[in-house]
Image 1 (cartoon, rainbow, N blue to C red):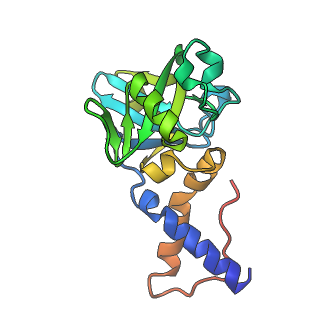
Image 2 (cartoon, rainbow, N blue to C red):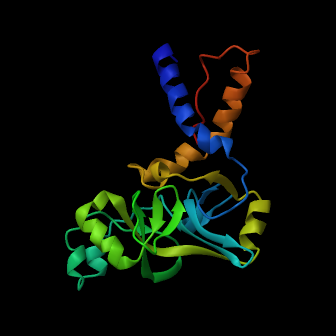
Image 3 (cartoon, rainbow, N blue to C red):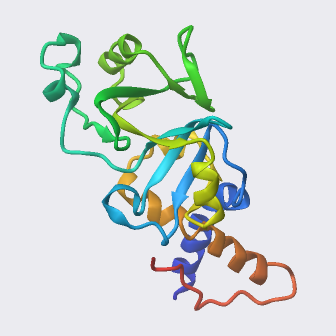
Length: 213
């Protein structure tokens, strides 16, 4: 690896460090579930889920890295306000696939918005439509959601099915959601590699390359 490529890789890793530092956090609203390689099947393999709710009654979240090829206007043909919104709907999960939810990225949410993390808010559909008309990039629509009964997510965490990382607006509203899992999944390995090589007692190995998974 050339020096330029190595420096570029270090900068990329530095961008991931906040998430890596939070690895093995307990689940909570506003945190991410990152599927480990133990998770198979068409629904949740390689998913990243933003938790909207977690307590002793159960958990709920939205898959944030599964854009579809469907626009909201195809699902809501009778809603004129959505006609100008040409971004795709995201698949939020297999529960209530007949419903749409919306997340809004703003520092000035309307009254009644549910703040999930930082400047990411769950909003009512009318608020989402209003913001989608003014700033399409600030809104994402999700069809369905992901849900767990009481204790179910805890059992999956105990089996090693998920990493729990802190979320941010930059992660949830990133430009390349389909690559999000690949960026977040090896974060702990990257952090361990850096800690080992940058602790003052080890020389940085210029041949070190990121995980390919």
